Structures are given as C-alpha cells and as structure tokens.
Length: 108
Image (cartoon, rainbow, N blue to C red; front, top):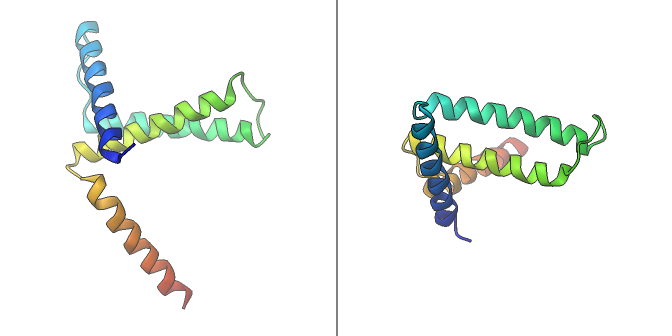
C-alpha cells in the first residue's frame, strides 16, 4: 500500500468521525483536539508496551490492542500534519535525510 492510500483511509475515518460527531451534537475536532487525542493514544501505547515488556500486568488481546494503538497514533499524525498543511509524503523523506546527515556528522 502506498502512503497516499494510508492518507485516503485516514480521511475516510475522519469523515466518519465528523458525521458521528455531528449526529451526536459534538463539535468538529480542531488541531488541538487532534494533538490531545494523539497524546492520549501515545499514553495508551506506552502502557501497552509496558505490558508487552512484562512490566505491567497484560490485558487480553494485547497484540491486537498494540496494533490498534500504533495505527491510532499514525492516524493522529496524519490528521495533525494535514491541519498544519504539511505534506508528509514530501516532508518525511526530506526530514529523515536531514536527520541522517546530522547523525552522521555527530559521529565524526
């Protein structure tokens, strides 16, 4: 699957959430809401990875819950990037190249 398809699926889920929020009388999410949701997802992911490492008591279907949270985090990152008009397909490789260059320079 190409990254564009990931974004399209994220957009579909976003549209479904918008419809659900409208039907239930809740406001549409803003950039801040997406960032807050992301931080909550990262917190859940952190707890689940502690369970996977044996530091916390595991829950049923731990591996499925881990898959879900990692994907929730990716969805949130896509939403935040779109809200900030950041084209991840363009920027991610550029930023990773810059980071790799900086790491290589720091080694010398």
